[in-house]
Image 1 (tube, rainbow, N blue to C red):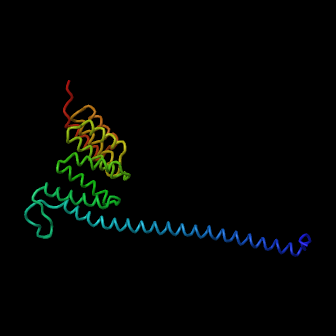
Image 2 (image 1 turned 90 degrees about the horizontal axis):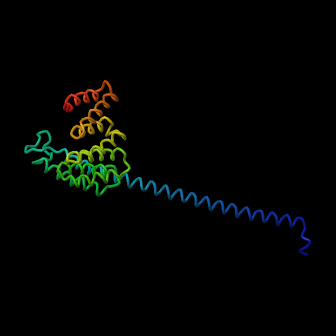
Amino acid sequence: MAEHISRRELKQDKIHDAIEHGAEAVFSHTTVLAIGILTVVLVAVGYFGWRFYTDRQTVQATAVMDVAMKAYSGRVGSTPDPADPTETLYPTDTARAEDAVQKFSAVATKYPRTNPGRLAAYYAALCYEDLERHNQALEELKKISSGSDKELVAMAQYQIGVIYERTGKPADAVKVFRDLSEHASVFVPRPLALFELASVLRQTNPTEAVSVYQQLKKEFPNTAVSDEAERALQTLPAPKS
């Protein structure tokens, strides 16, 4: 009897199969869609949670960074300013730098992934430099130089060049300033890097220093940069015959 299934029954079976397959397809599609929506929701929750956390960290870091900056710019003296009797006074520049470096280091250590935290590390290096603890300053500056913030990296490299010049390493300083002049940034523009380069070369290679000053005049004609380069040229010792 099974061999003689009527057309109506056959049609019903096909309809049943179609409905069954359609239901499976809808269920499968719905499941995939639900998983996709859940994934998006989880990603969104994670992203906004991360943003909330980082924003909160940045706010907290900014607050303690402000305290450190007040120490860094604190006044050296023994008599408070009548206009601000609450200001912090320091007996010496050294005392001010020691207090500031502790505060900056604390910010950099606690909030290393925030902009204030990264900037605090830079200012800590400046304090070490003020204290003539050059090795510690270089250590911090080289860490910053390996970062991804182009401007902060340039600032750190500039200070590295300054330290090399001050500690009797002119060849290293020349290398740093030359590189900065070829990769100028907003906070370390090309004229500044070239002036620093020429300043080092005045002591080690006056002839090349002349070339750098002339390059400044050529690149920045009729500007304060050009005028300063001309004054620098006039103060260079005459070449030995």
